[in-house]
Length: 365
Ligand SMILES: Nc1ncnc2c1ncn2[C@@H]1O[C@H](COP(=O)(O)OP(=O)(O)OP(=O)(O)O)[C@@H](O)[C@H]1O
Ligand SMILES: [Mg+2]
Image (cartoon, rainbow, N blue to C red; front, side):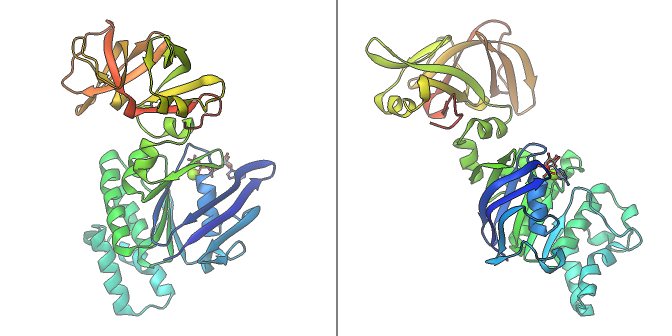
């Protein structure tokens, strides 16, 4: 197990800055997920840990030792890619055994470890087959098995499941979580699949354009996004946004939007008054928008009305898409709900479920 540290690490390719002087500590035994849009630098970060790219500035340390110039094969780190490469002429058994044989591990230990790993990945029935005789998901599990069998100091996974169908992804995701618990190696896992990030991670790092936007436990990232980027990137469908201002009305502070105006207490006023120009972006996740029964409204909540024109029934949940005045609104409601379309309906969101950001900087208030 290894502790991996990034100390003001920068990476440029020619004139292009891909990683911008970032610092991060990955604790020994932790499963850290790197989440971010395409091109934000996730693979580059992984490749620098593996030694396949050299940082342009800063230091990468593994267990306190600077590894900037240590060759990949001397780092004792295993990497699984999206496009896994297996030896096509070798059986599954020999693919799994390969790295152990190269290290001159004893025959009986090899046999024991191959069978143990194959069993935990449920590929033990295919040990005599060649890769071409396996499905994509089975091949990917062999590739994962090859990484874990060496018991390296750390595992790097670069979108290892993106070639699999939905059902296999979920299944293999569970297997990776189980393997991590079993082998306890420090693991860095790249994905842009949120469900994968939320379910696997001890901590998530949200990356955008080469910069770390937030580091936190999955529930922290979801319930307290530190800026508008994280708020928008994590959660599906995306959070609803309302541009509001902080105004005094009838001697009381209000948050004011063309579709609603709500009095707030002094504590919230103090929090929101940090926003430059009193300009605030209010965020409400679709799953916290509640359809009110006839004329019900709840205490401590924002009430507004919206007209929906699209209904997406997913089974366990139904998404409604429409508008509150000019503002697009998505609400996630119980699958039983059958709202009348195109007529304005009352909605509410509890204050506790609202997110407030300074409109100018995008930072959480
Ligand atoms: N060898 C290279 N030379 C020049 N630019 C590169 C090189 N490798 C990566 N880049 C650029 O660096 C940026 C980050 O690439 P990287 O592969 O790390 O992104 P990513 O987050 O893994 O994206 P994806 O989710 O699409 O895999 C991209 O803009 C990419 O074009
Ligand atoms: Mg990538």
